[in-house]
Length: 243
Image: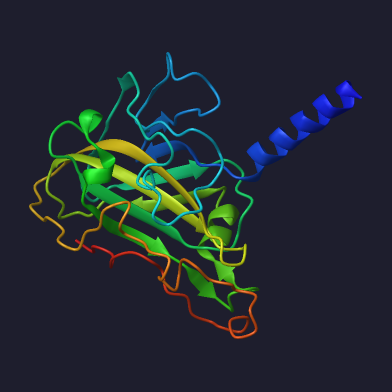
């Protein structure tokens, strides 16, 4: 009996681990960076990505650690990727199991070195978003479905006019396939942006603070009779900075 229970527990843990996930690697033009591995010891890991504790989601839109996921601390050997404003970044997830919900990408300038920044105090601006692309809320094509079709990846352009400096990059998937229980999957990485731009986005939010339970795109039952045929979805957060 003990052996059966042990195997059952391991299977349950494995199922939970495989059920969700996060960003595992990044590609900046031709430079590749491996992300943090949450199920390994942080000791000895080197990455541009901030720590995150597990593949499990955050389900509270006002969670104290919504900015960069549970923990969100810098590694002892923390790197920052040097990237030119106007260039592209592609994030790669584990095989993503969810296809209903938006993809959002934020940045925030650090007041000094990002390795010492408190991510909850940063002013985050949105540089990319996609939600319901075609069809209705239940059967339509969502950005996360597109991400899955594109080898579990999403490509975004760093705003060309952005002022040079140290920035945090925040990718977030919000899975809304469970009625009225959103699942937030944020991951952060550190950047050093180069270029001649001088733009400073002014439409910013803090995390927590950027979302609330009253936001229509956060707490939603897509299967409710009044929503099933709906062909629009309001993506939460500030407007996208198009610089």
